[in-house]
Image 1 (cartoon, rainbow, N blue to C red):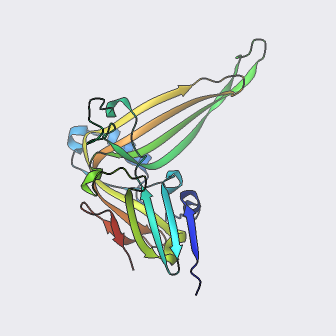
Image 2: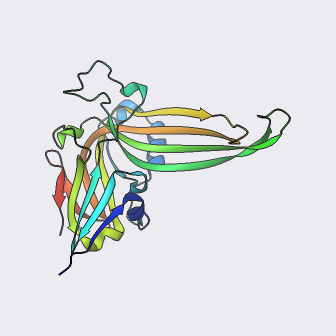
Image 3: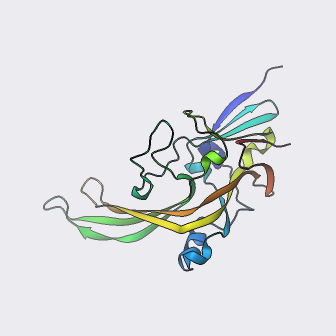
Length: 234
């Protein structure tokens, strides 16, 4: 009997993603928290769906009737200035303490204007904004030991028939400062006539568990909690 082996990249899996039983979108959660007292929100449990289309380290390998889903965390490190730790010993600790899970991207077109980047050439410059949302957490190694391994992360052994509607959900509780945001701006040029603003927005917490979800019915296929990086579902 020949075993069918197939590796599905994150974007391929995400193409089938149907968030019928999704949690409240990250942008709404962020806006709601931004209007609240951050001190009062510390400790609040949250539930967020991971954006698998934005997760280059996610893959699924199908062997017969089973599938091995793997979510690699090695490169999910927040490079914001508030997360730099230049004095740590890299042999025992990470330069970037907080890790991330991507949650959502929202693009907003804000019109256009007449501009001149090349002398004597008037162009219509577009104005585009994008908001990227993340869950930031510093307790990754509560789940598995720190190691130099590009495949390190979360994994699950699952029935092959869920691959077309597989999701990943994270549960956490918020810690202060609860939210963080950064802004980067690129000015329109003759070659790229778009003013582009990127806002990265973080919900900051302690990761409590990671669930592999059947998005067709909202069922938790298997659950990973601290002390484990792998789970199995029937």
